[in-house]
Image (cartoon, rainbow, N blue to C red; front, side, top):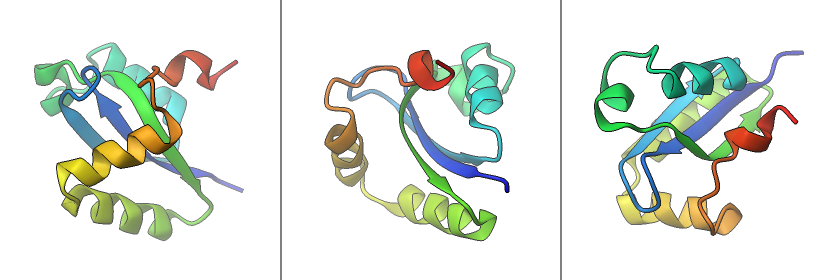
Length: 96
């Protein structure tokens, strides 16, 4: 059974944010970190995985991504700080 993730990347604490959805979180975040994804994240140095949520259904994941993208910045910051108050890079422990 596949797992899909909605994720938030940040350039730094309270920095530039990016919301995405993927079926392979490890690969996708690695691509952002390595600059393999031209565009917004590469241009603004948005590479730190600060929040993610898993979904069993791709449609639920896409709906969540779209919903979060429409949120005000303050709501996104609260979402991150509820689970990751120190803004740790969760990618560092994702594969361990």
